[in-house]
Image 1 (spheres, rainbow, N blue to C red):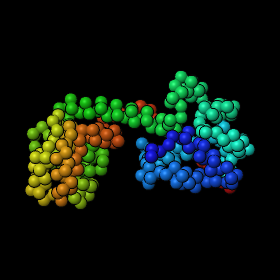
Image 2 (image 1 turned 45 degrees about the vertical axis):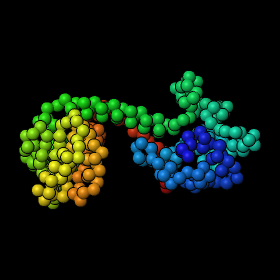
Image 3 (image 1 turned 90 degrees about the vertical axis):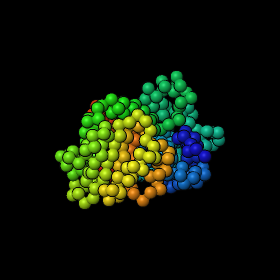
Image 4 (image 1 turned 135 degrees about the vertical axis):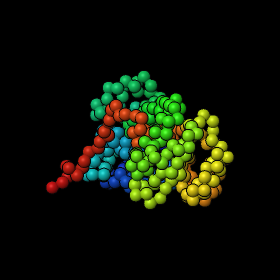
Length: 301
């Protein structure tokens, strides 16, 4: 089954706390995952940032929203229990609990921002589908995808010599090639509009990586990768990186997965993503810090 949204988790979470005992958030997450029949893969599914499991995040926000509505209360760090209001709600046997249900409580209305209330009135079908973190990360991913497309378009417009410099800059920023001077001397020898060369795998030069890059519009097929593998064998090299501004055919990818030599394929989209990750050709215009309370500060001696 699909991971339920955080509104769908509210009623099961409140029912779990109906015994009046103190419950830990961690234990509640595991119990609810069992009750809902989530698979191991669904339990491990992460938010786009990779920092937290999606289900854990949604249970956490279900708890937070019900705390703001006065149905649950915190007892100590990471623990909660049901309140009298929460028991009264369960006594009425609601079929579901969501944001619309919680808006009967003034504390919850006060908790919501004016923008949230306005959006929910205009688009009630979107109410509660995602947690605040998911909304932030979704917006971030859309911005990143748009920027990545711009970066790739700029790469394709640049001349071969600049493309060679771009690849050198990226590999050095990623920790390859020793110094930039070393990398620059090792790359760009072929003069065929692409890049062929040997670059150090680390600053000490304990191993080398054979690099080839093609500023192409057409898909790179298996024959090109076979020639690259042959070049690696001629250099007695066991590692190679093939970079292209286009993409690789299924046959090329299959060939790489079957040979002993380790060849990493970097297509245009991956190249653009790496440039974003290592700040090549892009600049930061704004930074937003997502913070949470430091409970140790308030409980420390």
